Length: 411
Image (cartoon, rainbow, N blue to C red):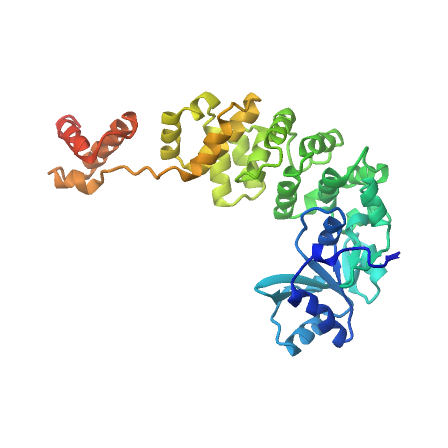
């Protein structure tokens, strides 16, 4: 189905350089179109996804066409026919049309094509298989626009086949259902997800993590996690989330507010893990070192809102850990206690602008006083730091040096 002049292309891009690519590809005998999430989101009048483009040129022809015009390209996924085209220091993904061929062993391989409908047929969902050209003409081969308007999230063709081509599509289905679905999920889609969920064990854990991080940030994530658990979708890779009500409370309290470490915090709230489970999840989902540190520390130190919303205790928490941990603790405490006190967001927002707290003494100060034994220097310094923290960081360097003279005789 072609809808002439259906989409305002300025919702996709206002870059003359990007628009010039369409003429460039035409000069080299090809057709270029916007595709996927950016088109879908523009049709829904929401902030767009990253811009992706598709063409009937082969990867080699894409690279050659760009080279002839002096445009830099980067190989991103040659096997999948994806070339990165650098425009205004932004990397655009341009993919050659292809289709999946299922082999006898159940795996899938790709085969390039010049047929747009064949390319659309291998995409996961109807709402993600809509293309648009530079004139705003929209090419919709599987009624994606109608499904988007109705809130119907369904696979293209056989849901079972689409999932077997790439099992991560199970998680993608629930993410897009969370974002765009209205009413009950498509029966065929849900059945295929349930019957193929064991296939998630074949998906690299990094891809699982990335999809879970995207899913957990959707507005309806708590309800979707409940739906997945009721259908045993995640049981092969994840334990059941026991605190969906906490997650729903936090989502409601945030009301669209942007927060730091959103995916990590929302996943933590869903599971409220103890230290052992936090460590297990962090390793299983291959968190980065910093993500793992924050996730496991939140499990180790459970702080109450009454502590977190006390100015003196706030500073001590930040000094002992950092601002990132403090802000994350505020959110997890609010979810756990189902409370957003009046000054909650004031504390959260002002944290970033708080001055850095620096202990005014160093080991050199202790050594300069005449104490040279390394072990004793460390003990004195640690005790002085404790005294300074207990003073609510009020004691000056000179006052601490007076305290040091007393400590040297007893430590």
